[in-house]
Image 1 (cartoon, rainbow, N blue to C red):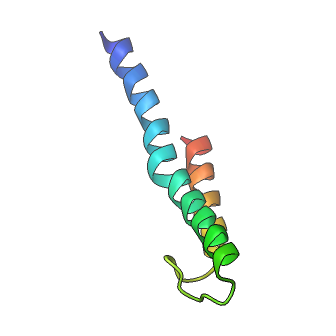
Image 2 (cartoon, helix red, strand yellow):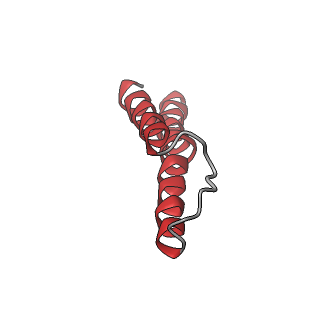
Length: 68
């Protein structure tokens, strides 16, 4: 039974990392790129800071996924 809980914990960490760490920056980047294609003069962004902030968040999530 202990091995099952360890495996569940292992799988849960990577699922949570993917869902809450990697997907949000990717989704925000996709939204920004689609929004700029529709209206290039639009300056409204969901996340301030530009693509650099999205890249930093993505890199942190990937490093934490690998590190764990």
